Structure formats: structure tokens, C-alpha cells
Image (cartoon, rainbow, N blue to C red; front, side, top):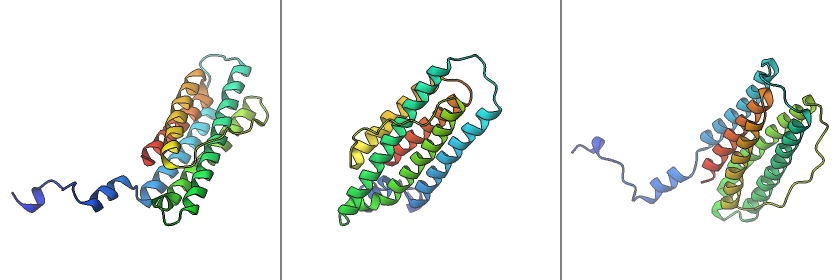
Length: 180
């Protein structure tokens, strides 16, 4: 068999490390896609018409819960970044660019959700964030749960708000994948 037709060996440690660590380009591209998706969701919602009326208070409560979840995820990313900084010689230090992008995505999500909340007739959400994890595995779990909750919230809404939460769910699912 020719060398160019042989399957790549997975026994080499560098090959395994390369597959498990996303490239900077992958992280930045994923972040850009997430921010663009959230922005597109808000933009599409502005021109979309509502298919059925919904109770304003239900939409506000759902959006407020999403705002609180994003705040908690921002805090989790910040704590994970501090942990990675404190352990500069630790492999977690290589996660700092990924964690910065994840945090930036969540800040963009928070801004979009706060704008949607204002459009829905609600004011800012004063709810504090919950205590969160400070390393990669728990942060990945938080992202997975956040993606599922955002998808469930999207199903409760319609129009631009549903599109916004669906795009946030997709972005948070990509964060979980990048952190695995």
C-alpha cells in the first residue's frame, strides 16, 4: 500500500493533541459565527411577523431567565480564565484564547438578550449570577446545559426572540464541543 493511502496513525501523541486542541482559527471562526448568528437572529426578528400572539409577561420572564443564564456563563468563563492564568505552566493556560472567545460570545449574547428584553417591554434584569465552575470539564457541562435550556426557551417564544435564543443555543453547543 502506498504511504499516501495509509490511514493516519492515532498512536502518535502529537496527533492526538492536535485533534483535541482546537486551532486559534477554529476558535475565532466559531466565535464570529456565533456573534453573527445572534445578530442575524435579532435582525431577522425585527422584520419577521409574529405568527401567534403571546403573553408579554411570559416572554419577559423567559428572556430574563436567558439573561441570568448568560451572566452565569460569563462568570464561569472569567473564573476559568483566572484559573488558567494562575496555573500558567498547567495545560489549562493554553485554553485562555478559547476562554476569552467564549466569554466574548456570551457578552454578545447578553447584549442581544438585553435588547430583546427592552423590545419586549421589560427593563434590565437585576438578577445576580449563580456560583459556577472554574475549570474546563465543569465549564463544558455548563455550556451543554445552557444550550439545552436556551433551545427549550426558544420553543416557548416566537418571532425574533425565538430566533435569538435558538442561535444562542447553537453557539453554546459549539462552545461545549470546543471545550471537549
